[in-house]
Image (cartoon, rainbow, N blue to C red; front, side, top):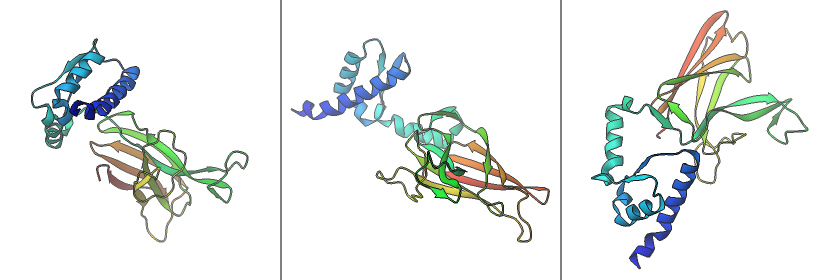
Length: 223
C-alpha cells in the first residue's frame, strides 16, 4: 500500500526521462536529491532504462545542496547551463491589418516579444550577444525586458509579477540618460547582453550630438 503512494510520481519521472532521452542520448543517469534515496525509485529506473548506467551516489540527498554551495563559492565551475525561461525585450514592428488583430499603436505593432534566449536553450557563462533595437521614440531610450516559460511567445502583457496564470513577467528596464538640452541623434540602439552566472548584464549604446553614450543594467534572475 505504501509503495502504491509513490507509483504515480515514479511513473511521471520515468516519462519525463523518456522525453529527455528522445532528444539526447546519455550513457549514465545520476540520481540526486531526497527522493533519489528511495530504493524503489532506484530499482524502477534500472528496470526501465536497462541500457543506461544508473548511479546512486552516497549522500545523494545532499547533492543539490552541495552543488548550490559550490556554485556560490566557485561559479566558474559551471561552464554551461540550460535556461529555465525565455528572456527577451519588447519591440515595435510595422502593423499589418491582415495579419495582426491587436497591440496596434498608430501604424505600428507594439508589445512584440523579441527573444534573446529560449527556455531549454544552453548558454555559456559570460556569453555576449548583440542586438539592434529601434527605440519607440527618438527622444527616449527605454528597453523593457521580460521573461516567460513559453518558447513561442509573441507579445508581452505588462505582467509585473510571474504567476502561473500569467504568461510572462517584467524583469526590468534599461534607460538611456542624457542632458535635457540634447536627445539621441536617431532611434537606433545597440544592445549587448552578457549572460552572467545568475543574471543578465545589459549595455545599451546610442549617440547624442555625435557622442556615443552608454547605459548599463543588471537583472538578477533568481529573485
